[in-house]
Image 1 (cartoon, rainbow, N blue to C red):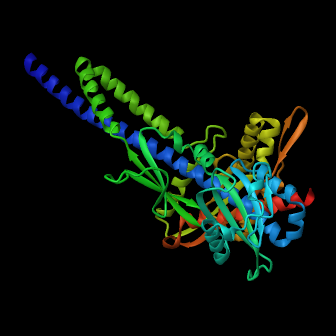
Image 2 (image 1 turned 180 degrees about the vertical axis):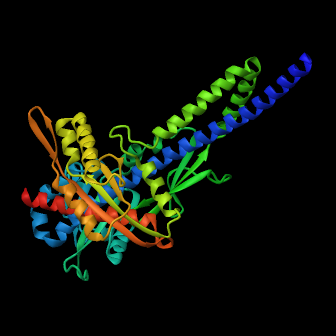
Length: 439
């Protein structure tokens, strides 16, 4: 009986060990893959957010030039300097009446581009014509610049008779440092993978593997265009898990009980990490991942009739607070902002921090659009302030909103988010315009 029980124990232990080892290794492999995907999603988000931030900043300058071209020309250093100082990736801003560069900022190291007639540079002039014909922002590049370096060029056509836009005045060119954009996105720091960014079948970063399809890819939504980032997992990616499996078997033979306990601890730890992954470490609010899962839950729920509203909020002049009072005070502002929003809305509503100084509020039920505007008014009417060395620090929100009332089959998450973002950027542009007017 002893030998039989011993045999059954050894057999069952080996069976459990093999099953557990396979499960554990597969789980770790999937977890590692998901971690890489999250890193790539973060890279995508940083590229998109940096480009859209710069695009909307530049759009406000283009609007000013459209409305007051003479003022812009005569006060070029002031108006262009504001845009340049508010961006970390914009390196050069050029104004070209009749497609000839007459103003450039900063002038240092860029004077060689002055008086450049785009019609004499066919590669760039083709992009200028595209922007002119489409009557909207056109993002070109990466290209080699006349003044040196590589950059993306956001071209804004300017017309002298808005809103008809039939009389072409010239263009505004905003050069974005392409290498700095990639560095800030973190794409250069991805480990264990080969990556490539593709635009219209042209590789603009990294390299593609001709003999292998990408393991996964993501679209990168840039202004008026779509890029794609392709990810190829390196060969060492799978071999490291196979090697680990053999050590796992050996350790399991030596002491099955220890491995079993370790497996339980790892499983509990995995659930704890997963729980923490849904919250923002600084404010304690739900994070972007939780917010997107909540939208998916609403979209796939049992209710056939949906009532959902989304507020997108961004702190005005937050960079100024960080630069002048320090990041510690900036963190206090973010924490206070989260508390203010949480105390203003209903307990059934969701307040989340997407990252940086961007927050969202998800309203599940409301009577009409006026209710949404009431919530916005309550938020803006509250004072968001902290103290620093007996000096008060105040901050306001730029708020955009969108809502959906109707049948579930007509609900689109992307449309809801995009509309809310667009309205928020309009509110921020209005805030900047007011600030410029006051200055």
